Length: 425
Image (tube, rainbow, N blue to C red):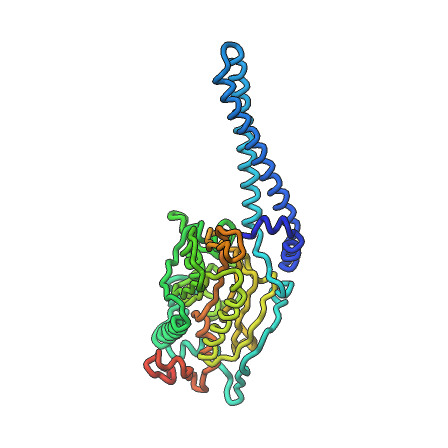
């Protein structure tokens, strides 16, 4: 969540952020009003509580009719104290609800607008042309080499489920292991993360557990299936005070689950948009001052992975209205998909500033010797994807051969026992 004190001191900054997202800026004024009501309610309660304590001494010293009169006044005052306490609690609850619904403050320089208002930061490589044969899409290739079975996936689990088999399963495991090895070499701690989390962890990461149709919920257990290991890794240090003399970097390997509720009729062919997939996710805890530089490092590590699988791609600076709840800034890496004739997102990295840490109560100590007042403050969190199942789409299509076989990128070959070509069966 955002810093309410900062919002009250700099409301126009938050109104501008809301406008950039295409969201309602008046919520900022509602939060300011709720904060005033909260403070007023607390002040009224404390004043009445002080009066109540003073009456206690008067009653103890009084006798006879005077004592009876005072006791009646005490009873009335107790009711007023209870009412004031309830009013203060209600004001605090209203403020909390408003604050938790407010998305993160957008970073300076983020383009305004929605999904189509991104800025292309760079383009790397050249989309492959196919002068000698008509390229096949990833599903046709996957079926020819025995890598993807959508029909049996649907038979077993329903639409948007699939089996990766044979070289398809091996290719995904090779891709994720290469990603994990790269992360370890960069100093990340490898993690196998829970895929079921409590509602407070899901909400703390910035997901709306009450209204987000993307999230699978196990009602009987009040647990949620994660759509990314970012959720589990964000909750890992919940309610803790961290030593961030160096960033804490984790690489989570997990299965991920998404309803794809808003994608009816979109990408129904193949494994571009599915309900279950696997992913290696980078997650970092760092200081507020280091967050922007760490964001650049995460993007560089993602680009390093894309170079290893020899894919042409572009990097976009995502527009404010397409950021999602937690991100202050997000860069997407989109690879060229030949049969679609366009770039498609393979990976992204987000700087969530202190938004998630405030919700999850994750702090660091601030030394008075560093010019601060001492005490603690919220940390910054960032995330970025190193590899996921969707990468197989671009790999198969970009590296396909005329007969339907697929040339394995050189960096992946050691992870496939030296296999240079995925052959047609």
